[in-house]
Image: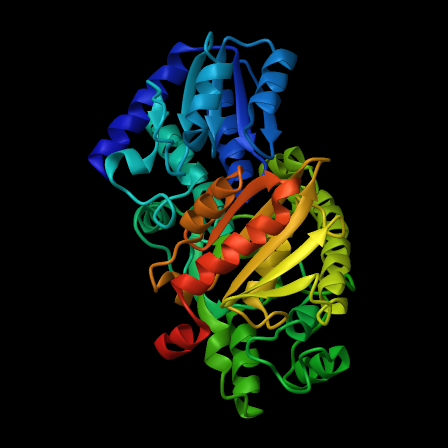
Length: 462
């Protein structure tokens, strides 16, 4: 682990040891919730008194509101704060403050207790998440907190820092540490989504990459295939089995069965599977944490993580799936409406207005960039946020970032040009603009994208 980073983390650990009665404020997404789980565990183990709240964004108004509602002299911010230093310094001028974050720090403002990888020359966009930074602090506080390492990886996964089967930079160091201490299991196996959260039949039925003819979108076909190779679909209690319930030999039976049926791209379904102690695969658990945030129930994410509350998890997944389905239907139903789905250079813009909730527009953009719903390497989603603002979410494929175009820079440039604010990471970024500047923003981002790269360039590089 980088020595400068651990020194910075040790300073925050010392700050936390010296302070009691702390207000902990975290971002509401997967990375922020994962950070909050780590914070809650490490502070409880230190017998600290604290309150924990979540915000979807760090503005003066929202930060001032939670500080007023919770009377604490000490404030800890996790997974945001670095990019809002002027706001933090203004609102928390009379508080003892610490920030643990991985976003690029604001150029105008400093803070004494500030732990951020960018401050020591490490890329927080790809090498470590907010939860990863919080974990490093927790480990410096007490080495026993190494058991919290899986939450660092959940946060990194939720922030799109996992590239296929692998992590990089400090994330990979955390993987090795978690594996060494038996806090995660890594094995070669089927990478079907829903290792625990879906039954085996549905996990196969929903597989689209690769497309399994006769199985994908065909539940009876999936049942017939599994029975033909001798896989029991239910357990002795009559409950549907999930992939997590299968033995290694049964997973091999599925792989061999698919190969015998001539599915040539089956290797896409085989790779490194990162399994938590509760049986969930990390990608699936990260999606669940993200769902909690998007449903404005981040505290439920903390509960599920700490208590393995699978009933609550099932409730969250049901509610979230319904919302996702409704919002994706909106996109698909408006494919021919150029006022809703607009071409902007090499990308596509979804102008959702009030048809998609602002908390969900980023998720919809992410799904569209990973699927064939919108076949473009850049997706920009726009949705109304409150009465006066518009939330912007930008997502890009890896081929875009390989050209040197970062969504964080794109959002910062385009949003600030029209009087808003933006930032984030290379492949996933966002911002907020005044609603009166919507058309001007679309013009600006179309010009920026057209000038930066073309579809022909991307096709050539791919």
